Length: 237
Image 1 (cartoon, rainbow, N blue to C red):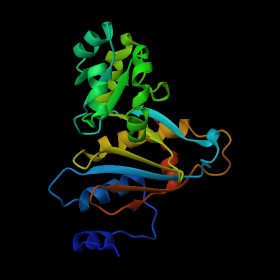
Image 2 (cartoon, helix red, strand yellow):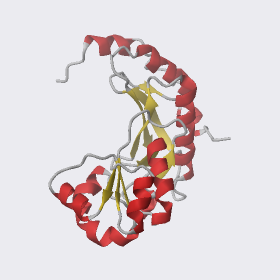
Image 3 (tube, helix red, strand yellow):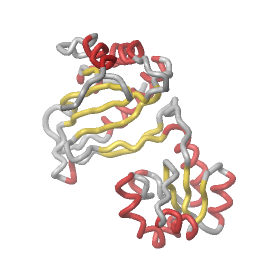
Image 4 (tube, one colour):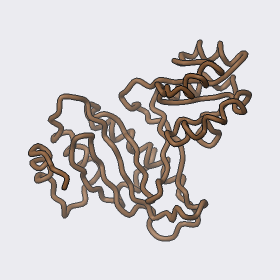
């Protein structure tokens, strides 16, 4: 049986479990309850009505949160020739080809975002089993496989708060939206952009409501259930 700390139990008792909260109410609750000594990550969890057994109902996409994620993002770029200098000048933390491949095969995974140019994909394809399950494998669907001339933009987006979202096997989308130290307006702006992006990826084949349930939570805090109608109605003006 999982033991719940006294702090977590006390925090959970302050939440009305029978009430569906608006996004701004939920964020206010999480900020009020945060008592730990580190900067917690605020996360969104949405149970969708997608049937992920069908490929055409997978929900996935990429967006850039306007206020970032509040953490340092280490960017690695697989590239050669002119791409090497472009990536270095654009501030990538790690740039290379064979040397990086060798390091990763040896077990090193000290980066948060992996980018690549098309000319090196044949070489790094063998890293798929390692990088793929960690969401680090460059691919065109999430905008991490780019031409050398587009590396400055891709690197900047990665540092600014690039978020990739997708439904897991249980049709749930999990995504960070920032740090508890952000002010409420910053978190609401990030949440609005994320929801707007998710709505744009709603499968046309899906029947019924898109969001079944949704919760906001922080790293060490309890979850707060959201009003899904209010959440899904959020749009970027």
